[in-house]
Image (cartoon, rainbow, N blue to C red):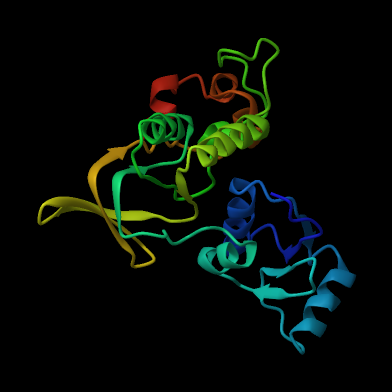
Length: 237
């Protein structure tokens, strides 16, 4: 994304700060984190902004606007993300926005179908936040996750695929003569077919170095496992 000069004021222990940082990371939005417990000027800035208050996270944008303890939906709106579809009915709705989902969407759209993709976090999936992908055909030297995600997103748009991000699907079912999908924002979309391509979610262990290892390859995390824990157990849902 093109957003720059975003500053997130918070602390390392704040759960809402972690959520906001995770959301911005999934959307591949660059930001500066200011720990107000270590940066007294940052703390004073937050107190001045809130007339003496110290609610975190406080996120300040390039245009000077600030969001205090925002929800993911409020962040999505501020970032200009597409969170509501243009239509109520589609030929195909795909739940998930990773490489498998977007590839399916491209093929469907090429055949003339109206396709809607709904992703709960950032389009591109886990591949989009991976440091380097070296196992995809056509990239002999590898490709960064960010570049790969941007390419497949642009290709999807070129074929007219409608893309929603930061929207969590909470229900899928049948409605009269069609299928339906509901999001946690309260929107319901109907379609002739629904494809579930939500990918995988790795179990986190909370061991030192885990975040760095996951940027490169889950296999690197095997070296961090206790000798009594198996690799398969570590990555069980």
